[in-house]
Image 1 (spheres, rainbow, N blue to C red):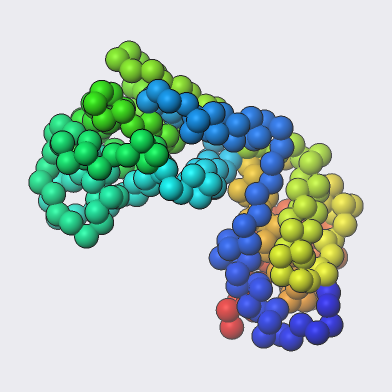
Image 2: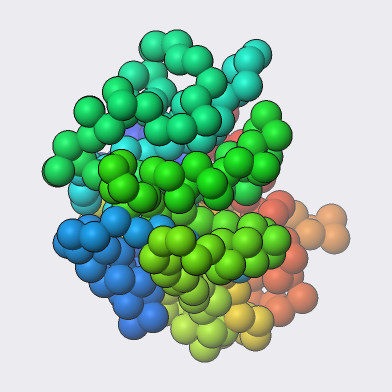
Length: 284
């Protein structure tokens, strides 16, 4: 690592990395196909419903964030909002346009929403439909309102995600409007884990001007379980910051260096302790 980095600067970098501000996105062929499918949706002229689904931790939220950022002038991001009165999906879309306004409870798409919809701002993104549908007994009307928003005369394209099997079954049963299901792969083979970690180190070194070296492929090669990309990134953050801050762990009463600690496959479960130690050092 560069010798001109003070402890204060290294802690600043570590805090940014641990808070997920590094911006690392690992793409492999299957994931690139998902991005291509989303890009095709943005370029299409007909409105439709698109559902992303996959295992927990496969990176769906980060993919939707990247999509919304890429098409920021065309996308309306709907986030769960909790209020004292009932607030359904149509209301939440209105609040995405006018976050400080109050609206009555709409069961139909109002003319005001149709009027403010512009040809170049016609995509609604809803990450985790599970959360939205569980608010204010919204599950009873959520699909009816999605169909209204995507149908004439609203003509919004709606991109959303879910891991809820019942929501997915009900989505696939929709007949009144065109629907698309995108299965998002995200389990990285154990044989590729070391490559992903190395890419993460390279990314952070370039972004933050450091020269932190990974532990090498030998200890990483002992990972024998396929893992979601989010988990690998989470552990890579801890590994990078541990090397950056020179954190070591204590096992069985004896203090060991990080390289020694992680070179044993029996220490696979110690990443949580490593992360805790790194966070303590970074935020001290």
